[in-house]
Amino acid sequence: MPAPFTTLGSLTFQTYTLLVGVGVVTSAALIMWQLRTVEKPGVVMDCLLAGLIMGLLLARVGHVALHWDTFRHHPAEIGQLRAGGLDWHGAVVGGLIGSAMAARLRRVHFPTLLRALAPVLPLLTFFGWWGCGAARCAYGAEVDNLAYYPAWLVWEGPDLYNLFVPRYRLQALGMGLAIMLFALWVLMRVLKRRQSQSDVEFWLLLMLMAVGMFLLGFLRGDIVPIIRRLRADQWLDAAIFCLGLAGVLHRAFRPQTFGGFRHKPGNTSPGRIVSPEDKTLR
Image 1 (cartoon, helix red, strand yellow):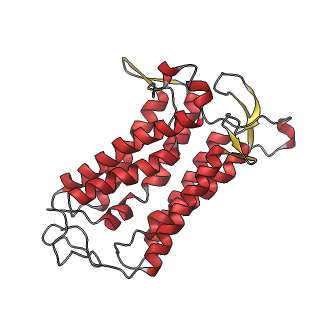
Image 2 (cartoon, helix red, strand yellow):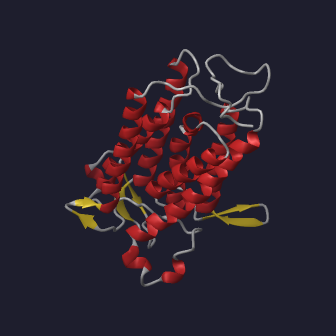
């Protein structure tokens, strides 16, 4: 896992903040590459920016709510994002709300935007877990002896209080989950014979990520409220799974509608649908 601080030339950054920033920039670049034939990419950026702002806000709200027993005694730390502390459930919900509102205002076909957002889920998950490794957040639960477990599953690592003990290698496992989900997205794109504007890829990846995070919850060592023998964040994982399932079922039972982005002349790829009602990017 990386050091808490990273020095680039004469500048020193919180590694967590730096990695999350790299994840956001990489995700935005991938989205714009997917929508590279759009006439006015600035409209897409408006939707992404709205989703980013709302996602960060609700991600911090979710983290503070899950760890309220700590923050109520240290209210000054609520706004300190640099040391870590973003809840992925809030990030997803906030990102969806913000981008959906902006898409409606800017007349962007939301399912098409969601399809472009699908790889953002594993990308930001990867950088988020990587950043947690530097910030010592979302650490694994302690184990009795490293010799009793496979080497890939455990290590002697620190927690938020910099206490090094044998524990589950949770941040690395989370990064591995993200890599598998990204590989699945690539596979789905390779196997698809033609471009489509279906958002089913996004909802399917969201479901699988929720399942993975739920299972990783059994290995977590950071303290959150326990509700009926499950961590509070595991209940939120289940809620996100239901959200993804609802998205998949909605797409499965609703006929594909026309709509999408207006593309540059001569660059409209096969299967990319332009709305006959012109409810597109302008």
